[in-house]
Length: 494
Image (tube, rainbow, N blue to C red; front, side, top):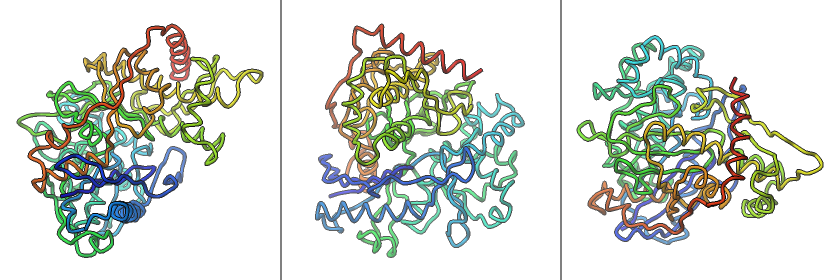
């Protein structure tokens, strides 16, 4: 029997069809063919149309069914991974009221900071592990304060994955792990975050019914089934934000295990069995997919907004569709380590949490018009993103996170040897690449909900590393380049 997993990203929708009993991946597809765009109505804002997400979920589903010819009656469940921290608001007819304010939108920073101080920083961190910051609760408060006509229509405030589940099942639901990423969950009280909601004058009635992250969350309506090409009653069996879902996909479920990804944003994600938090809020803590109040599983998350989006920007600037990512790697490899003094600060995708929510912008520094060409720019971009990972990982190491071994998927920036080797060498980590994706993990986890696997550990635990990147011994040049990069960052942080 089979399941389908979806990975709802800000650049595309990915889908995978898998045979749960064996872990065999029958098909992996992406929709649309070109990357999804973000609307930027104001500097620092980022919005997308949730209805587009569903449209491309339909397209991706039809693709995997056409590729595999698996009968729809043999698809027993679907699972959802999704871009974190976004806000989708719907009315009492489940219609979208306004575009989604997505994860990298910076408009609610001041709103969250004000609530953090008013609640009391120690109290807020003890109960919620985070400041409301620029997360979903703050975005909802921003709508209440700035778009009262829209807010008056709100029946439910949803995360992106909640919206997709609503479209599939006709029911508005959410999860504890989802609420925690929106700073809408109280870990001390094991309840919705009334401290935050009361401070922001928001009603808990705006939060939909809770369902387990792994388990039967609902079933496909006749309408959704017809649109997707699946059977009515097919179970929606799993839902989690993209980073806890990526960790699950890599079998990162137990305390001490670490996952990373380099997509539009970059993330390093370690699992703890304590209600741990960073007082400086440079990294954040959320409920992992297997968290319970009796057995805490907390994902400590370093997020770097300015990551793969810079690599894509460089690609579009220097060659567009005519320049492949493989060709970029070849060009970058023709340039020495350190890009002969050229370096990139990649922080051009909104406020950066690890930089205390500052938005310093992206900078290309040290240009020598007689020496540097597009190969240098490409390598400087790759190294700059890698350096930003190293900078954040040093924060995690200072907090006691063990980064000696990191598991990554085979579908993002870690495919770049330059990128992976730079991180491994500067941190001392061994990087294990596994042939899995967030969509594959979501599919496997959904199988647990319908009894196709005995446990989530059994579902995702059979994978083996397909390649390993270890630190190189000759690291002086890299350390020198990193030091120059970090010095430039420090200057712009003043």
